[in-house]
Amino acid sequence: MKYLEEFQNPELARRLLDEIRATVTRPWALMEVCGGQTHTIIRHGIDQLLPDQVELIHGPGCPVCVTPLEVIDKALEIAARPDVIFCSFGDMLRVPGSDRDLFQVRGHGGDVRVVYSPLDALKIAQQNPHREVVFFGIGFETTAPPNAMTVHQARKLGIPNFSMLVSHVRVPPAIEAIMTSPSCRVQAFLAAGHVCSVMGMGEYPELADRFQVPIVVTGFEPLDILEGIRRTVRQLERGEHTVDNAYPRAVRSEGNPAAQAMLADVFEVTDRAWRGIGTIPASGWRLSERYRDFDAEYRFSVDGITTREPAACRSGEVLQGLIKPHECEAFGTTCTPRSPLGATMVSSEGACAAYYLYRRLGTTPTPQEASPVA
Amino acid sequence: MCLAVPGKVLDIEERDGTRMATVDFGGVVKEVCLEYVPDLKVGEYAIVHVGFALQRLDEESARHTLALFEELGLLQEEFGDPWEAAAAPEGGDGAGGTPPAVRNDGSREVSR
Ligand code: SF4
Image (cartoon, rainbow over all chains, first blue to last red; front, top):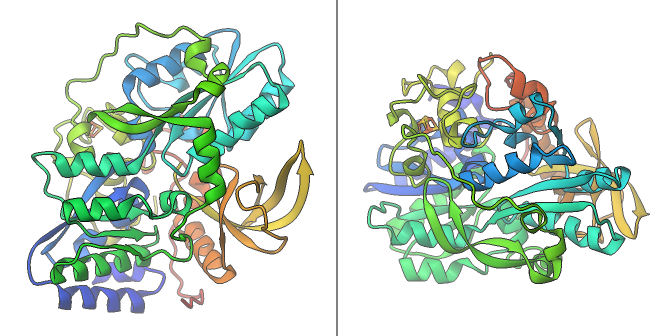
């Protein structure tokens, strides 16, 4: 119980844990979809506080991690062009392509800029009319609406030198892919709260029904996660499989209709390759025909790229919950956040990074390690 | 990058035909687009992701989440200097941001 001090409200955390303990009678495997949730879980040692019967499996919900190598290589090639200002969120800087990363491209003279918002990239395009400004548009349903709005604005304001390299992914098809995989052990999902803030919960009842899995929409604080687990375990023990909202302060069942309308206008659903997992049908978005002019893939010819995945990296298995990061041989030896072999080690939401930061080599953490001070 | 942070609206204005706000994230102030939560008012809170308000939030849960994020160093991860983080030597926190300083003095009052 020593980790309980880490919680903002240890009393409430203890009550939730007691209730989970009192409810559970047999082993259950729950997948937390979102990488942000994985970090909270590992940072606070939540997985270790739970009764042994409750196993948490880490899901593929880290946008940086699942962006396919081919797209990273395209980004690197565009970013290295002298006429281009390449804008990206900070998390992408160290994500390894086949032979370099954005940080190195910048070191060799590429004009790579980190922006906080895609609108910042649009501003840069307005200020630099004689340069091509390209924004790296990745992310799940939470990030897609801001990027969609930015492309919409670029067209409305007539900014010809702005384009976006788009590689957006959608959660529901990933859940379906996980459930139909022959090696699947997942019996319930903690769904990603902020994805549902945008999309609502309408896409989930069909999945819960078809695969007989409880899907509980869950937030990101330790108490949110414990509450999500409590509700999930209760459903599993009762043999129920419904969609439940354990994060009502940020999620309404209809989501954000304005954002959904913009998504439908700017993007169209497409098959996407997920790094380490492979192609999942209808699992992503690309710019729709109407916005083709703003598609960096069309503007710059970056086809015919040959990629080289490091053979040692098992991030595909990590992302599908088949192994835990420290079971990879490269973990903490040839693969560290400073010289990562896979994106799951470099991303601030990656599962390998979570284990490296908070749990080093799979040893039981001291409270200090579970919540590092240095 | 998927982290959405609660912030308080300080000021609202129309720019390039778009509703924009100045938003305070526990001390860090940023420009935020309000197009997806157009009826948000000055003084209210919202969940903000990459410069866009995505959903209104009540003040109590917003304050609570902000306090926790600050304590865990997540705000530094979100708003800190990414170049510095990418160039940082191998150490406690290689994946981004400055090592989170976690402190538990029990002084913060929490009600949920
Ligand atoms: S530890 Fe490194 S090499 Fe192993 S799966 Fe994770 S990212 Fe890949």
